[in-house]
Image (cartoon, rainbow, N blue to C red):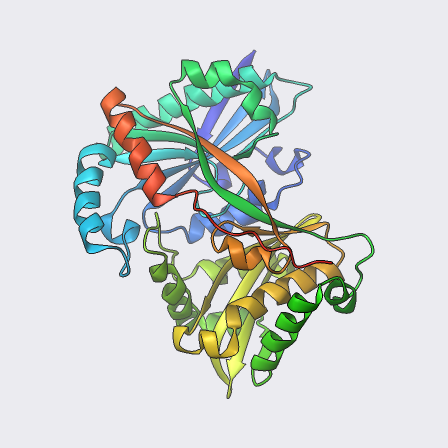
Length: 385
């Protein structure tokens, strides 16, 4: 007999949760605990456990997202669209969304099931039942209607796409998101020199120029005490980049980096860029088994171009992945062109979503998705010989 339980705290999860054979740190309790303790103000996480008889056979991470205008549209947002967006949110998105997955990170980090114990369709049907139960609970507890339901980030070859009949029945439509930029580490790369020597002349020269411009900057790893001490400055630098995004669906909690370091320890790395002993930038990544996942970063906008900080951060993360013998470095979406210039390649991703009201709302929702997460035209770079 297949059944499920819903939880809103990591402390209440079944003891067998971490015993599932999942190679994804984003589904493990240390990361989920850090997320629970320092989620954005408008995001709450719920956890669904699927059982066959008494055996845990699948899990899902569900995030309740409350749409706030100041979080979605940032300082750099177009004034006209902010006015239109305010109307759209009030009319179409007003209320809450339920997202299966982690809205804060690119990739499929929301679902796992044991295919030997439960079929994909049975698992997805159970997740759907859980979403309906959760929607009613949120309505009863908070007086909020769930307006949007979404399942995020799947590659074209992910098995979930084989359940087209499920998505049709649930009235979820498939939308293309920006690609995930993934850097594949070649088997014969063991050092930075191996990587750099693989560049053609143009990009080898570009690498050397970037390194020269950052020669006055010191890069060092921050331990837990340093993260706590520099917490305000880290958040300020993060905001510099986040606010420049124009459209976003959340703003990190001020203690997010500290809590990740506290829970994941050496599994979460944070490196600071210092100029004259002042922190002017930082980047972070998460060790995810054989994959290195780049995470949030920040920098002083006034110094970024002069020292090519963003490009140097990309190089630093790629080289770390090479030297530590990861199979790939996930650079996520956004800034696709510059990421391709250091060797990352685009992988198309898709989301499934619906508005719970009517066909007209779904039509407008498609427009919102296209604006907020457009699949932009860009020129892919090819840096290697």
